[in-house]
Length: 133
Image (cartoon, rainbow, N blue to C red; front, side, top):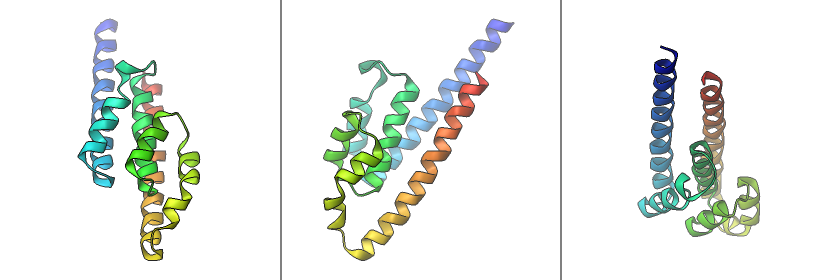
């Protein structure tokens, strides 16, 4: 009985992670395009790296945060793959972001705030999933 319960919990956890993956990829596509989302899924795939599926989700979340800050997709993909943190990526690309007109900058700032809030919620959800296991 204990083994069946463990299998059930693992299945539930895997389903939650796949839902989170789909959500993040859709949000990345909205911020950039389908090709960027597809490329991210291929570059950061768990089977190509030593990190866990949660690590893969964290990479996607970081990419989403960086894209929302206005960093171009090609730079964002390369920077996230290079294991830089989101703040460093955004800070190092401020010159590009500053080129955005002031009205657009306000909109980007609001979007970034939403993304950061969403990132915090996603991290809390991942921590809850770990505690449940």
